[in-house]
Length: 161
Image (cartoon, rainbow, N blue to C red; front, side, top):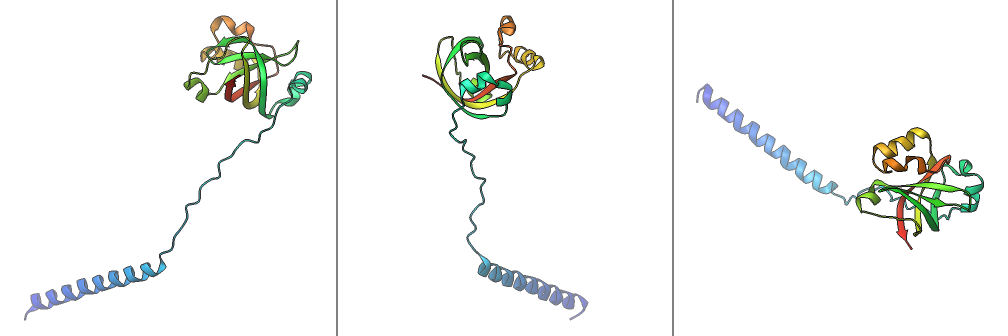
């Protein structure tokens, strides 16, 4: 046996050693197998809080940031494909914007409909009103019909009663 025979034997011993090492690793890892339950984020379910329309009419700016249900309110006017206004009382109206999900579903609301909806109150200013028109949520001719209110209601769930 010359040099090439010795090299061949060393190569075979090295391959056998590597194979034995991987076999040992496989046996050790089998002993470590445990069932691991996936960690999922808990789904946040909004609390069923009913918002008080009388309190909102008295101090809408103080209600900004509140989240909950507005139930059985009457639609005053349809402003466009994704916006309308509701009456909080005889004098105060609140603009409502539909969430993108409601728009995709083809939700339509018309004047004098009675609706119940879940959502959140946000600040409303002139630039937001202008963006509603630019995004075609409000019809171009109805920009002046958007109630002059310090906030709006973003509805993420809506049913016509």
